[in-house]
Every structure is written in structure tokens, then in C-alpha cells.
Image 1 (cartoon, helix red, strand yellow):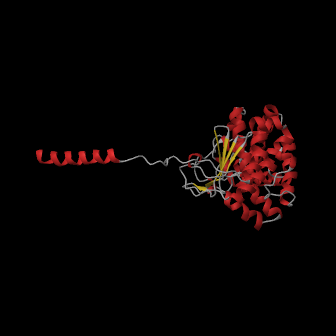
Image 2 (cartoon, helix red, strand yellow):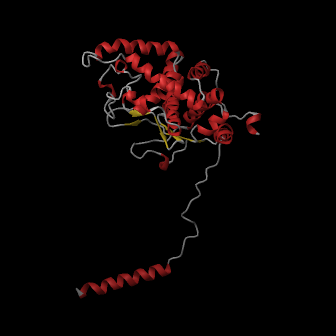
Image 3 (cartoon, one colour):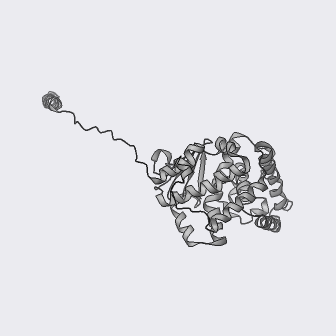
Length: 318
């Protein structure tokens, strides 16, 4: 054992001498992370941060990301498009229907953008998530400019609704529900047919079983948010078509469950609770909200809203 002691002592001594001779580098290894503001940052400050205390994060931050997925940064041009949509179709919409104090108090205080969709193991992917009643993370942002350029008219409306606009209202519903809960009997109406995290499209007759979308089958909280967001982002004709399909599809459901209630009856029963919740808890008429959002959405689809400009108006510069 002794033969190893001496060389180790020499190594230790030489290391000590080396340490004594080293001098600290005058340049700090701690770098300043301050980012110089650009035109878009000033637009966000004037339109979201100052009036609503809403932080819109489009630069990539690992700590804000969901580390359970592979994520990529959002492209700045896509982020600009999305910021305009959030402002015009969400913030301004709730200002109009419920007043600016409502929006300032309850609308999420942080948006964080991810460039690509977040895919689950079952083949579905995450459009957005709400956290702690204040943050909404939105994914798939980098596909937005393509959708805006490629589609028009009804197809543009459908794609924007499905992938982006409805997601924001869906996640905001969760935030409202975390603040004021809805009636417990909502979850009891279709309590026996929720499927949890199972693959939602294994049964094509979800409407016949009382759900407005396949994802609504996962649990009652998602069911509530899907009903609300689908209702306000579509017109009355679309909604009636879903109810008609639900009634028709119940025939297929009854082949397995003979005494199953008609799907449209179940959807309407749950929708009555959603409607009452919005009115009683927040003073919002859901039909008025749908009309306002429909008008504003028509402005976007018709090209009457500039989704690319970040030039401040004289009033915004004040």
C-alpha cells in the first residue's frame, strides 16, 4: 500500500502549486441575459403588458417548456400573427362582452409559445395547456403562417378555430373553472362513459353518447371546456348540425347499450349547466359572446385585421 502514497502526495502537491499560480480571469462567466427589445416587444408592451399585465413569451425558455415533450422555439413572424389573434379574438372579445375589468382580472397573465406540436404516445398531440390559473402554453405556432396563407374563407376559419382560437378559449375555461367551480351534477350526466387517457377516436359515435368532440370524452373538466369553446367558436347552424348528428348516432350506440339516452339530449343537458355557469358566475350571456366572437372572426377571415404589423399607433406610444 505504501508505494501508492508517495506519488499521490506528489500529484497533490503539484496540483496545489498549480492552483496557487492560477489567476482569476477578469471576464466573468456569468453573462447578462438581458435581451434588447425589438418592435414586436414594444407592441406587446403597449397592447398586452401595460393595459392587462399579460406577458407574451415567444422567445424560447426551457423552464417554461414542458420537459416531457420535444419542443422547438416559435418563429417570430408566427408569434406576431398569434399575438394579434389573441388580442383581437380573445382579449378584445372578453372586453366587449364582460368589460375590461373582467379581462384584466381573470384572463391568463402569461402566454408561452412553442413552435411545434407536442405529441403524446397515443398519437394525439397537445394544442395548449393551462397552468395554475395564470399561464397558457400554446404549441404548433410555426404552422400558423402557412394556414393563414394557404386557406381562405370557411376552410381558413375551420383551421384557425380547430388549431388555435378554440384552444385559447378552451384553456381560459379551465382558468375560470379553477376560480369558480361549476355544478357537480355536470359530471354525473355522462359519468359512465368518460374514457380517461384512452385513444379517443376508437369509437366514432361520441356524439351519440353525449359528447361534442372526441376529446370531450376524456373527463368532465375537458368535457365542460370543449362544450364552451366549441359553442362560442361556431355559429348556430353548425351547433344544430352537431345535435342532429348526435341524435342520429345514438342508433349505433344503442346496439351496445339498448337503453342509452339520445346524445343530443345529453349534450343539451350539459350545455344548460355551461350556460347557467357563465351567466350566474360571470354575468356573461354565452350567445352574446358567440355573436361577438363570430363578428370578430369574420373580420380576421376577410382580411380586415392586419396580423403582421407591429407598428405602434400614436395612442399606443403614449
